[in-house]
Image (tube, rainbow, N blue to C red; front, top):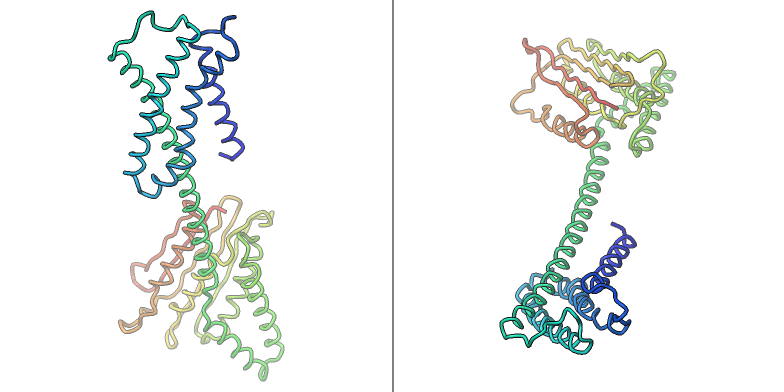
Length: 347
């Protein structure tokens, strides 16, 4: 609720409360403005007790966990004001000879009953003030918590997006350096591909979503650069199956599939055995699917560079970007020779 709306709500409630004397006693020619104002002292005291708690006692004592002081101060305040309201109303009845005034002197039990009624009225004001303040405080804390979670998620997301393997950058630069002497034309093409990859990492990576066409171009360049440093016996394919009308309206989170592609090159290639990496991207207006299959070359127990950390990071990335809007299946084939990973997301 906005501050302006809260003020209007408070004003409406107190207008109703101050009009209550007319509701109970009815408007008659005998009720002068002076009479009405004097009858309004009761709701005025109720309002004073309410705001004494709302603006001072609750923030000063209750919210700071000094509850004993809070209840003691309120007990004295409510009892004193409750007694004051009773005797004030008794004075009003006597002064104006109200028809609602008792036709006999009140007994001590009746006096106590009226005083308790006024005390309960003021206690209700304290309860309402406390409830509203706690609700407002809870709302503020909940808003702060959500903002903190959003900030943390955004920081984690940026961190995940920046986790492009530094070895990839170093190896690419070394490959470009080697190509400059043996194949200058290919070196120039590689530099262009590398610049496109880095542009996507540095600039498009800051956006929440990017066109699928741009993401596919990034992945294509990324695969080409990774392919340069692989042995000849490694078979690498990268295919896209897109609708005829194109993918101009389809957007995805930047670098959402980069970790999977990196893992395929990292764990699916053997320096001595035949290996393969097959990457296929399928998309339409309903879904985008990335299917990666690569030869499975299990690491030794001493090698801790397995899929574990990368898979957990990928899971976390998907949970942040597409909560409840993705399916991910991965594992090793029955014969143990192939590792597969298929992600389907709803853009």
